[in-house]
Image (cartoon, rainbow, N blue to C red; front, side, top):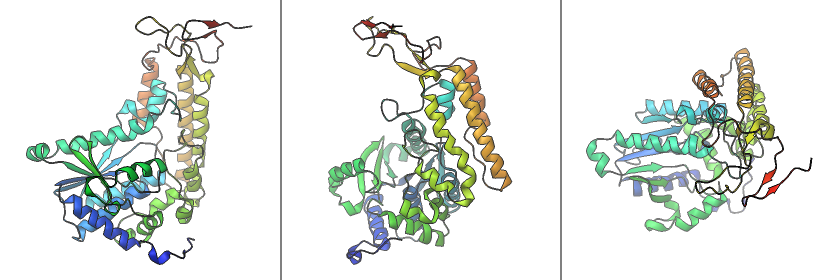
Length: 399
């Protein structure tokens, strides 16, 4: 339970926050004929989609010529979050707004990229490709498709307004950027975070920037469902009735970049989602993928175009073909076990790897596909080799 503070009367209420959101949209929205909403399916973007639809339906803000909610389907979202997002998109479409799903090309999808091409799972240091590849790039492509679908005159003359669910307090780094830029373009903090040219012919506005997390939950749990939006299920991905207290940051199932599976742990504690517990094994699989015994390594002779040695001549690289086949079967086994439990208790099935993706992974393995610069004939990563330095000197093995 959230305790009231001595200054509770000075806090901005939910209705006050909605009013500021309305003023933000009235101030900036009138300059744009076409709007799009970046919809991740998380709590903030779900609140944004539904409150904007509500304000338009109740004629509190003018209806733009078009409003398109673009959902970035990473294929790795927590099952309750994905189910909720699909329900919200369906409801939005019923109400006359456009709903679009953005998904990465087959070979760029998370598990296809890892198992089919052999790229190790992302880490927090030098190899962090996932967000851009399975979320940002598909969203950018979908946004361009929206632009291309406009009438020729609108396409050449009109700019798009992209609405995002960015809020202060979700990220310290992001808050710092906001504090620097929120006073630009004549805007005040209460009017949202407005940025120009965030994409070709596109400006961005964050109209719920000022919402507190408790207000997001009040909207999703009480207000939006009363208006017919299926948003109460979003809380299940954040811990059910304790969602506000847990306030888990959601992400991909078994995210290899997170230190703990906080969101998945919160989900499987709820009886209706307990059958998903086997998904926790994914993190162990990602850890095993990084082991040198499952990867290839350079032998110290790799050179640049000018003939000099590269900076790290003995670097570790992609997964071996054998490891990729092994981990493919392991992940398919997890999927089968979870779905067997789902069918036994009449719960939603999961899809970590669908038939199209499985077929493509097996095809890429059969074709001996590797990242650029790797042939697959390199030595395995756990084989001891003399250490070669960039200047060409070698540290020979003692034994």
